[in-house]
Structure formats: C-alpha cells, structure tokens
Image (tube, rainbow, N blue to C red):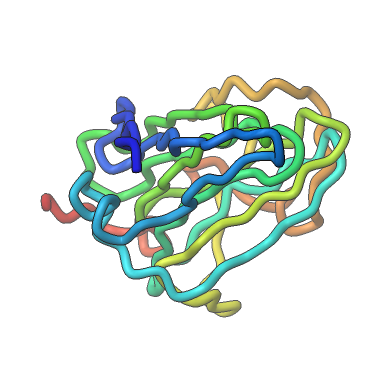
Length: 189
C-alpha cells in the first residue's frame, strides 16, 4: 500500500486524510480505515458505530456533539460533496471557539477526523450527498447537544445562506450562550 497523507489542521487532533486510491479499467479501490496506520498518525480511536446520512442540496446538519459520551468521528462521502466543519468547544482549550473545515466528496475521497470534545456539522453543496461516519462512542439520545450553526461568535464561513435545518438544529444557542455545564472539558493530552 502507498503511504496515506495525514494532513494536520489548525486545530490539534482534527485531521484530513487523503487515502491512496488505486484506479484501473474496472473502477477503483481504496482502504477507508486501517487501525495501525491511523494510530501511527495520531488517530488512536476505537470505532464502535458506523452511520450513513443521505441529504439533499442545501441541507445543513449540526453543529452536534455529545457531552458525557463524546464521539470522535471519521467522516467521508461516498456520493456528492459536503462542506464539513469541526469546532473546538472544550472548556479551557487554547483553541476554544476555533473551527476548521474540509471539502469532502466522492471525487477527492478525503476523510476528516473530528476528535471527541468538538462540535461537528456539514452542509451539502451537491444535488445530494451520502455521508458515512465512524464514531468512537455510541449515539446517546439523552446526551445530545448542539451549537447554533450560524453563531456570530464562531463566524463560520458556510457556503450556503438559507440551509434546510431540522427543528432541533434551529433551536441551538450560540457557543457563548451555551451553559458551561453542557460543554466538554479540555484535557491536555
């Protein structure tokens, strides 16, 4: 196998991965996860749940997180294109309130690792998108929280103006107004 580039972002722990893609006349092959290689590059997560999201153009999902059962997520797109965002919301983090983004698509085949303690969201910029993400903890409905996608204190540069949102995503508060007891705590690793 060819080496896989692991691209560090401005937020420690948030990593963009460019898998090696092997094309031939039949199509292509790529490895979507290899525990040893990912661990060697700082992603030592044990994934326990895989999710598949299908959305139409203009949909924005997020910014979501779990507090008591934080989830690291390894995200990739099997159809379409998304603008994916990770926000450090860990209390006392030197990067608190900072965000990074990545364009993920079926064409570039990039992955994005969002560590536990970060809020995550994405918007669909193609006609539709199928997004797969591996999680480091199970979904816990009673532990589900979020930050307003358009929070002025974050000033995320979303590529859409009037997204399609779920009811719950319209009710989230800006980060500055989120009760402190609902935010994860930074642990200097």
